[in-house]
Length: 355
Image 1 (cartoon, rainbow, N blue to C red):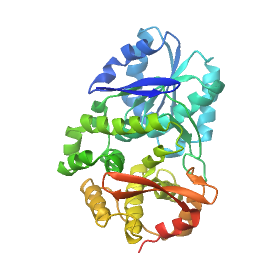
Image 2 (cartoon, rainbow, N blue to C red):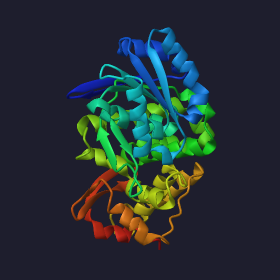
Image 3 (cartoon, one colour):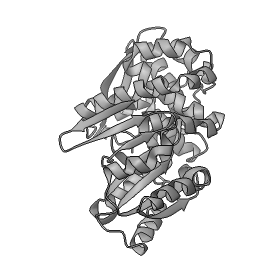
Image 4 (cartoon, rainbow, N blue to C red):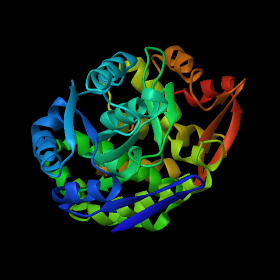
């Protein structure tokens, strides 16, 4: 299955197929001439696929090296990026060489950020290995690292030369990692695709979803492709992809990156936003209940605690969607119909009220 992202100055293909990782060498050869390739990955993914992929690329005539860092959200930092820059410089990487991001969302965000800033930009490829990365973060060209203040606050827009998605690799994921990706899938259905929502409703649990995961991944990627093509730099419609993320990112930052997964935080954020929006008459009654039912079926958290309300509010003030004294949030008119609303930053205190 192939999707093509077509932008004014660049286009690239997404290949989605079970077992396609075995063809990674042929894929790279079609996109790049022989050159140096740095595989950037984490320790967990390296043990599973790092040696296999590097050996295939070496046999094809590429000069391959690996930069491996500790797995986890805390590694998505400027400090790790600095280590990667030093590694690339030591290896003699030039503008004609490239990076292959092999891993989940942390790897993809960090590796693409490094690629977009090293020597003011070298090309890169995305090979996502988690459900979250396959349906969302590997597509669209957003790169980022975290700071102590906020998630993804330092980043660039830089598109890959291609994305290779093999749903078969999801068999190695822990249940919590699968559920993290499902939260983003629910988000896509909630904001833009009632047909996908009905499909998710028909699945008994996450295991049945995984049996049909290739078509689910394709549906999510198609939604994101359309939105990215319309708004590459996140100034308009693309903001709709942030449903649940304004509060979700704050929850991640306040808890300490890696304590609560991105998907878990987004799940709580979607429910919280919908609960308050219903009370304000901005969202159709029953929407929150539908979200809770869907998320709980896939064993995702839905309860939001406001004990750290002030800390969460401070984290939100650093959100990238803030513009002066206002911030753009995403609400649901109904399931399958998301919309962007501009509110004052102070209004976010309302959305952080638990009761």
